[in-house]
Amino acid sequence: MSWVLVGADGRPYESATPGTLGGHRRTRIYGRLDCPSAARALARGGYVAHRVFFADSATAVAAGYRPCSVCLPERYRAWRVLTLVAAMDAARVGVGHARDPGSSALAAAFVDAWTDRGGEITAVVSWPDEAASWLRQARALTAGAPDAWLIAGPIASLRRVCDRLSTSTDWDPARTVAFATVGEGAVVGRADSIVYGRAASSARAHCLITPRRRFESSVSRSASASPRARSSVACTVSRTPGTDSSAPSSSIAS
Image (cartoon, rainbow, N blue to C red; front, side, top):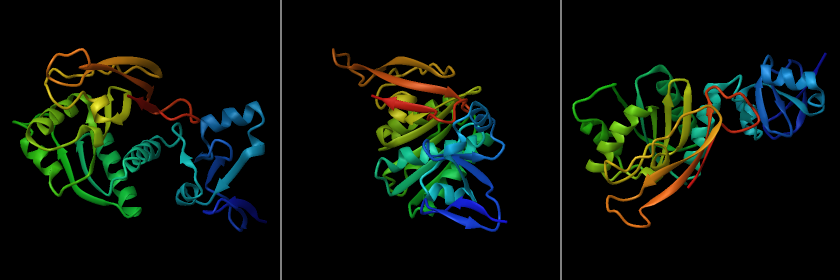
């Protein structure tokens, strides 16, 4: 008996063993064989015609598929962050994270994925819930001349770290991907949009974290008041893990 799987080149081949992951050819999403989202789609009909199978996740990613946000939420979040950092044409990335399990796991997954693709990690810095001044963490995160950053953690801790980064280092929030959590909600995007901004301590974008809502937040771009000092940032935010495996969990448009 043989099974038809999809290889890293995207072409089908016969295998002596069954696949461990399933996917959808049109949406280019892969996930577990017991994924509840895929099960619902199969029950509605039509999904079977585009169903494919993979030996493992590395093969699925190489074939151009991304992880399902429903059944593989941790892999999806790591994929989403990796995609955003890669879009910055970065080579050297500094990674910082809070010490909660979710932030630590996301940072570790990103480090593995980034080095696997030949990228360099200049530093991996963790921080506690409270610190005296955050200066030590800020200096460590910007050491080694990174050209991009990833920061992950509860949004309150990200604001404290970004305050110190913006006042004491040459950190660039526009070249930083932030993964911020508030309770069960999560948002991912550029730090200048997600956290708040570069200059004044009053330049804050208070991101309202609500599941699968679209909102607009006013962001002060500079410390001086001027007619063009404020602009609108639109975010789409979804609950973590996502409830729809066919759409990204967030997007940023500035």
